[in-house]
Length: 172
Image (cartoon, rainbow, N blue to C red; front, top):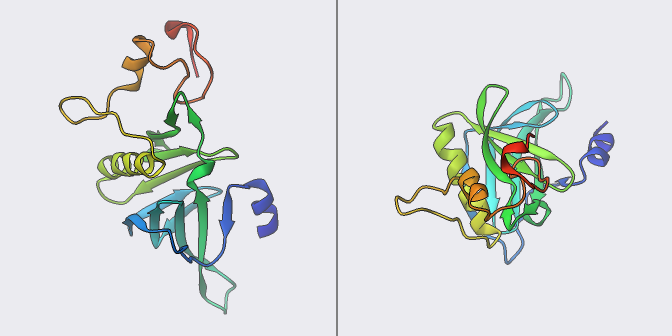
């Protein structure tokens, strides 16, 4: 069963968490959900300069108890369109979520407390870890991506990735 899931989602690798020598932890959260095949409560959601790690427990059977599993996603697999990584704060299944569009899948993460604040923080830190500066306005808030499209700085939809010819005519 797990081999089928791995074939379906080539971005994700499941192996024990072991950081490379040149890999360091940037951000960590103990209060996260992962919306993948189903909703999984994570023990840890960890961002490093190379990967995103999801540490969770999975039942191995009625009498065997729980085992700790780790799934990881390479930052290099995140789609970049119009110079911006496809990492956004969005609503998914009634929750404020962090939406990450990888080359082979779309993953959603949410947080138990302060979800809106944490998803914004994670989106900014993922962009920085990928070497893409977070564009901020004078007040320190992230610049509205739709405003950029109106000023013709972006010619791709930030949500579906399609090229936009006319802003008013595009619908995802």
